[in-house]
Image 1 (tube, rainbow, N blue to C red):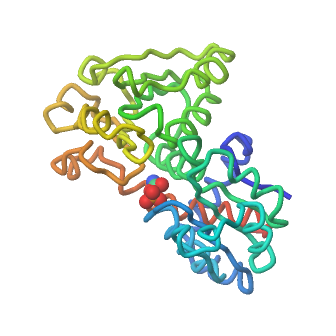
Image 2: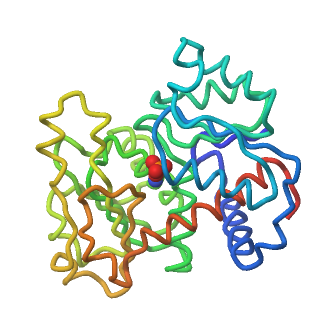
Length: 305
Ligand code: CP
């Protein structure tokens, strides 16, 4: 049985297949409308979410399936002390596939061992968020028609931003990719990403503080929210949260075909004045996420498309 815990659980060929399926779903939704009739998706969200949970639910409904689940730990028996292992073993009796978000890193691995059905990591702590990366990859593909030879700037909270970690793992597998990590010292990309992902493959990267210094080099600019919920000290969060605010003025030196991305939710990292810039793709990511989650559910349930 296949699960999706880390983006590296999918080969580049499998990601290509998902992109083909997602594009076909977008073009021919009626063809897929009854593919999962009688199947049930459980969304177990122990942390808040708008996009990920609702896009999983929309994805399953648009495939003809049904959904059940909870959107906060306090409305489940986790509030009484039930373990992730027991919760997922129970839910595996009711559902054919599970999407789970949890504040503890590694919780989806525990779930996958016990559920008896495929488990999808919908975000685990500050670790990984592989289905956001699928949304991001489809967005990049639709704009650039390649993943090769891109200079990818990632800006903001690179320490706790799980979408960043998954996207770097994914993009590191393509030829000619360079990374520019833009962050304050306290929110730098974790060392394991450098030592375990980039250095073994000889992938070039630089770490900078000023967005303005590198803006003209970038093909992709991936903005992120400072993850206040992962800070131990509120004063540090308040000090760091507005370090980067993307404005039309800061985009003046940027390439005409720059792709501006953000996994959302946005707090203050991108001025709403940027929203009408044709290079702003963060709401495209939302819709692309639904298509990729539809393709992923079909794949994990081994449904022929
Ligand atoms: N991008 C993302 O994970 O958004 P939500 O937290 O709203 O699911």
